[in-house]
Image (cartoon, protein in one colour):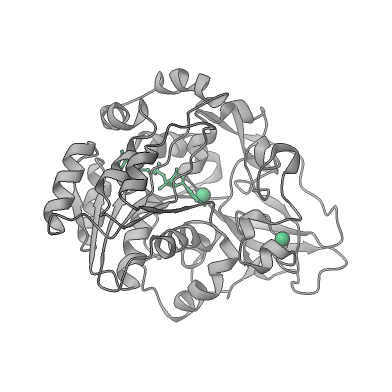
Length: 393
Ligand SMILES: NC(=O)c1ccc[n+]([C@@H]2O[C@H](COP(=O)([O-])OP(=O)(O)OC[C@H]3O[C@@H](n4cnc5c(N)ncnc54)[C@H](O)[C@@H]3O)[C@@H](O)[C@H]2O)c1
Ligand SMILES: [Zn+2]
Ligand SMILES: [Zn+2]
């Protein structure tokens, strides 16, 4: 089959690799019809490169049609349409029963000291082949895939794999009071979806900051108050002005950071050396060198007694956190990989009824799998208005 494979920093290709096969009696093989490219994939081709191997199959936001089921699979049959969560979780262990699917005890990577395995991810998370491919082997066929109706288009359901539960969890963890205020840092797919969900769940004031013009325009069209800068002092000043001088009740960090501490830090210089165009240069000036920039802005911007919710992935080991400031401001901090299945029962009914979150036209680009290298480059360099890209094998 054809699959998007990792070849090095900034280098993904489409290669022919062996077709996946049933290995355990509860496996299913899914023929992929849509597969998102995520901000997390950009970490893999930048500073997480030391944890990748040449030939790794990328992708953790897939959906498709079941083609083959293992002999113990009773919940699905060939022809069923499914979305595959990015967490590889059994849905039967203690952690899964607590709604902590990203900590699944059946797939935890204990030798790495890390949580549940993830599709298309690093050695830290099991190095499991991903879903930017024609076919995907999915374990736990009775409990992991999310069965969805045959209509409408993939766009309605595909974001159940990651974007929707990640943003939903970020908003839940933010604990915004009804009618309260939230600042979302970053307007990539995750930040953008956080603004929509925060509004949907009753936030009174939704403010967001980024510097990419198309992303700001998109949020503005959805009625979000946008701050066109990522410079800490400017964001803090503007958000205070919008919130009676106090700061927002909650801040969601949908930016993340890749490099601090060993061994990831050594990759930082190389990563920043391949900054491409002017927009990215502008972002990197404030965020690329100081990978804590967004988190520090969150700590300064949030009101005293407020909550910070981190959905951006933080990969370093020993980061200097302004703990005194956090303690003095009595900030509450919540974070983690999204627990996909924890939120599916909340989100899926919304999608069956209609499209209150605007997922049907959330994707800015739908491209054939063969065009993945160009699509990755555009998404990474924020060119051609790329916000959310779906690969269609
Ligand atoms: N927790 C989870 O389970 C989970 C799941 C999916 C993605 N993520 C993470 O969420 C983050 C966002 O993902 P995405 O797909 O939206 O990525 P993205 O790279 O498209 O979006 C990040 C956005 O942040 C902006 N930005 C950079 N520095 C900033 C700053 N200092 N202040 C404000 N904005 C800034 C960029 O211009 C960009 O638009 C990534 O770190 C990704 O790894 C986490
Ligand atoms: Zn993702
Ligand atoms: Zn489990």
